[in-house]
Image (tube, rainbow, N blue to C red; front, top):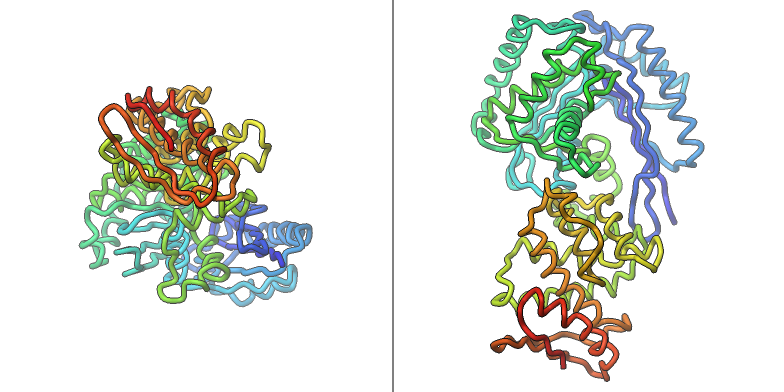
Length: 505
C-alpha cells in the first residue's frame, strides 16, 4: 500500500515542506514541495523574543501548507523547528499559537540534531568519504565533521544569515570595515573548535539556500548546461568571485544578479560569510553543494534507513538511487540486471583492447541498468527519452561529468550515432570522454542485443582477442540464433571504434 509523508522544517528565515510518496515496491519520490520566506527570527534581538509580525507570517504560511497536505491526502507529517524557535524566550507561547491555529505540533530539535539530519541528507545522496558539512540557516550555523562516511563531530553556532546581517551588516550595502569585523568574529568562533584543526584540507559541503545561491551565481556566469544543483562543485576561487559580486553590490543591484533570490538579497552576504570563512580556514580547494539537507535527512531516518540498522547509512549511494529510479520508471529490472551482467563481462574480458579502468566500468554498470528507462515515455526513440531522463533524474553518487557520460551511453545503446552534439556539453566532457562513451555504448549495445528476447537465453559470454579479430562466444542452453543475428548489427561500429573484426558464435 502506498503512503505519503511530509516533512516541514520551520527555520529562522524560511519554512519549507517536502511531500514524499512511497509506493508498494518501496520506491519513493518527491511529489510536491513548498517554501515561504517568513523571517521568523526577524527583530528577535538580544531579548530573543519572537515578534508578532513574523509570527503572523509564519502562521499564514503553515495554513497554506496544511491545505497542500489535505489536497495530497498525506498520511503522516513530521514537523521540526530549529534555531528561531529553539532560542526564543516565548517558545511555549509560540508553539501553542501554532497548534491552536493549525493543529501542528512541532518538535524543537537541538543544534546537534539539526546537524545530524543534515549529515544524513548529505551522506546518503553524495558519494563522499571525508568532508566538513556547513548548513547556514537564518538563525544558526551547523558544522559536521565526516570521516569514513561516519559523523565524528558536530557543533551548532547561534548565528545565521539573518542574525549576522542584523548584528553586523547594513542590508543596503556592506562597508569594508563591517565586513572585516564580521569575518574576524566568525574566524574566532571557528578557531575555538579544536576538531576543525584536523579537518584542514577536507572539501566543504554546503547546505541551504545560501550555498545554493553561490552555485546559481556560478552556473549563470559560466552558462552551465545542466539544471541540478545537487553535487554541483565550485572551486574556492569561484566561490570568492561570487561572494565579491554580491558583497560589493547595493541591495537593488543584488536583486538583479542572476541566481540571487530577490527575497534573500538583503541577507545573502551575511549567509555567505560563514561559508567563505570555513573554506578559507580549512584551505579547502572546493565547495560541494548539496541540494539535500535536513528535510531529506529526516525522511531517510524515519522511512528509509530502518533497513540499515547498524550504521544508519546506505551501503551504496549510487546503486540505491538507480534501483529507486528503475522502480519509478517501471523498468524491467530483471532484464536490466542481466544486461549489466553481460556488458560488464564483455568489458572485463576486453580490458587489453579498450584499456579503460574502474571509473569507466562504473559508468557502464550504471548505464546498463538505466538503458531502458526511456520506455516509460514511449518505446519509439526510447533511447532519446532515456538521455533526457538520466540527465534529470535523482542519480545520486554521480558527478555532473559522469551523469552526462552516462546519459550519452544510454542514448547510444541502440545506435552509436545518437544525433546530439556532445559539444553542447563540452564544459563537462571532452572529445576524449566522448570516445570513451562510444566504446562503452558498443559494449552495452552488444549486451542488449544478446538479450533481444529479454528471456536471458544467453547466460554469459566468453571473449577472445586474437590479432585483428575479436570473438564473442555465447553460453546458452537453447538456440540463441535471434540474439546472435541481432548482435551482428554492431560489427561496423565495433570495427570503427576498435579496429578489429567482431565475430559472435
